[in-house]
Image (cartoon, rainbow, N blue to C red):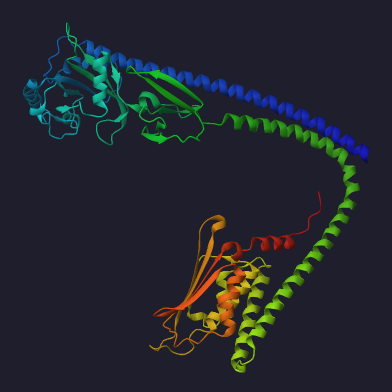
Length: 552
């Protein structure tokens, strides 16, 4: 038997080693192949984006170079360039001529805008708020012409862009650099418009040192940098230059949105830098598929095949060993049954002793000296009946706990039809169920049996809730009898007082209080959930009720 086991173990060891080696090689090859394919696809995409950006920057340079002697105040400067800028087919959203107007040119510019037929020829702020032209002492950048001209774009000319938080700094940088400069991402056309970029190219007249204005082109960000094939290996995001932890991403409809990258988020698979508008833009590429997981799955398949073959071979040798071990396993199962039976008997003895002790206490406290025999008999029968009901409920659940609402059944406590019960479903432990069952009976049995001052039976509410999280959870129970008073409610018995004030709270490890309000009698009990739902007791019961399994 030992020799057979040694042979089976040796064969299994060799099979496992060979299977692991094959799985490792496959895992390494899959990672290498996927990495090369992903890097190649990313490089191709970044190259296409750079070509697209270069083409659009070239358009801005060409357009600015076509201005020979620009007239600053003219409102149709883009008209001669229309055929040239459309020849590039760069799908810009809006092209514009931004003139640097001196304070003395503002009235003439207003007249030019009016004669060109623009909707609002007034020289105003970028947000269409009035501009105090009398207080202007320096040249300002005013949008004088747009292309294409439609109902929406005709409202733009006349706006001064110096104070725009995005466009203003871009124009200042373009004037200082003397070359096209791109803006930060901004919404185009309107406040909720598509996210895009604006490129401004300064126009410097011959012989001059300062630009007379700027030719601007606006592009949607999604087709400019974030376009991607649905079948590609990656998704692309633009690192937001305004926020170190932000990214701009486009959905399948081309709508660009911002997202915040948490420090714990997985890093991008690769980052590529492209140049546009005299600044660098970083593109973050995220692999759509988890190459490591895919390689692990492939390696797992290879390993499973190898281990299956190993198992088949070992199984042929182990068949004989199984026949020899079967008798031993049957003996172990029998021993396990005997141990379980002993444990169950011990647990049964423990619970029976506890129940008998509770009943003894009930009888002793109920029939103590000085008690009215009829009242005592009624209370004793009710209390034992309450105990009997909770034991029946525990037996039905195999002592796995009792639903708290089940303790309010009519067969368990008096006046059940007048009790409004509310609270979450809670399965309380056996010990808590016994204490709460007696508690509810004691409260219900002492509620007003006659009529109150207004001739109605008391309305009773019993509600509970659980507050806190984890080990700090707390159970709150509130019993309130409305339409009653200290004068009409039957006085709690000595046993009831002890049960309400001491026994029940101590059994649950909590505190209780009872008091009268102007219109009701209130009893409140607060206890930690660890004692109301005793998981140790439940685990012990589940262990007894679980089927005995033979050792492997």
